[in-house]
Each structure stands twice: as structure tokens, then as C-alpha cells.
Amino acid sequence: MARKANILNEEIHQACWELLEKNSFPNIPRVADFFLTKDGRRCSNTTLMKAIAEWEDMYKEQQEHELKDLDEVLLPAFKSFSRNVTKSFGLLLDEKVADLEKHQTQKQNATEGGYLSLSSALVELQQAYEEIEEQHASAERKNLELEQQALLLEQRNQTLLAQNQVLTKQLEQEREGSIELRLNLSQREVDLAKLDNKLTQTREEKRQASNEITRLKEQSNKQNERNWAKITDTLKSLSSSVQVLQSQAEEHKDRGKEK
Image 1 (cartoon, rainbow, N blue to C red):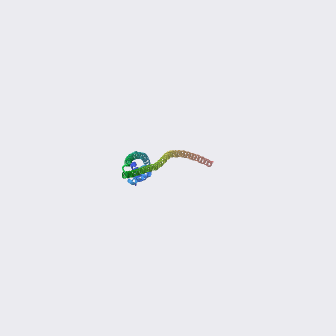
Image 2 (image 1 turned 135 degrees about the vertical axis):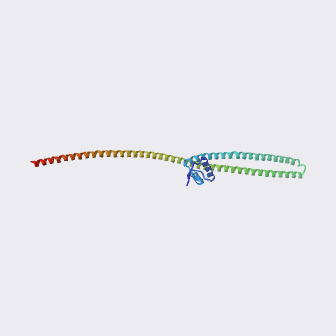
């Protein structure tokens, strides 16, 4: 059987984090079931509601910090890497252009030196051009990788934003449920107060009715005593009258005999 206990706010906050790690957004029934399953403890819905509201504020603040930190860490690194690649590619291109110009000058100087010198210069120029093409292709591949990383970063950011929106919506729903619960609790407290007042009024009416019944009984007893006294007096008076009449009848009878 579950036992009542004082569950600290910090314990409720920790329970909320553990539920969230299990992809279960915390609310009053889930947190209450968490402690009931864990150690059989339970507490009032009001205590759970207040602690969960505090945790929701902490969770929202943490989400905002995580998104901000992610942008602050990755975006500068991405920009720095892009600048370094662009700078390196520019320097390499300048070197190859200088080499081409040098080969071109050598080619011109070797024009009078014969066909073989010109062919050698052309071969070197072709090799230099192929090297530039290969390095350019490598730079393009790196640039493509950077674009893909940037795309993945953007997708990750959008995913986090979507998750945050979902969690924010769930948070608003939970808050609306909490508000409704508060209203229901307030209404029940008002109803309970009305019932207490009605009960007090009923008890007072019962006490007054009991007093009235007692008063009526006492009044009835006194009235009965007065009526009994009147009846007794009447009987005594009638008895006296009968005795007088009997006496008169006997006297009249005796007088008749004497005549």
C-alpha cells in the first residue's frame, strides 16, 4: 500500500529529467506513478504541480542555452575553416600562375634553341596545368564537403528547433492542464467551504429545533399540570356539591318522616 511522504522539489526535478531521458514528457500522473513505482511514496497534486512547473522553466532555459552554445561553437569554426581553405587555394593558384608565366617565358626564350626545348617546355606546362586541375578538383571536393557539413549542421539545427517546438507545445499543454487543475481545485475548495457553511447552519438549526422541542415539552408539562389542577379542583367542587345535596336530601327525608 502506498505511503504518504514529503517528496522534495529536487527529487521531483530529478524524476522529470529521468522521465525525459526515457522520451516521456513529465506531467502529474507520470511523476506520481514514478515515485509510486520506485519506493511507494506519494504526495499531493499541488506539490507535484508546483515542482513540475519549476522544472519546465529550467528545461526551457536549458534548451535555449544549448541552441545558443551550438551556434557559438560551430559557426565560427566553420567560417574559419572556409577562410583558410579559400586562402590556401588562392595562394596555390597564384603560385601555379607564376609557374605558368615562368614556363611561358622559358618557352619564348627556348624558341630559338630548337624544337626539343620547346617540346620539353610544353610538357612541363601540361604537367603544371594537370597539377592545377587536380588541386582545383581537390579544393572543390573540400568545398563540397564543407557545404555538406554546413547542410548537416543546418539540418541538425532545424531538428533541434522542431524538437524544441514540440516540447514547447507539450509544455503549453501541460501548463493548460495545470491551470485547469488549479481551477478545479479552487472550485472544489469553494464547494467544500459552502458545504461546511451549510453543515454549520444545519447544526445550528438542529440545535435551535432541539431547544424549541424542549421548550414546548416543558410548556406542555406545565399546561398539563395546570389542567390537572383545574380538573382536581372541579372534582373536589363537584364532590362537595354532591355531599351538600345528599345532606339536604337526607334532611328533607327526615322531615318527611317526622310529619
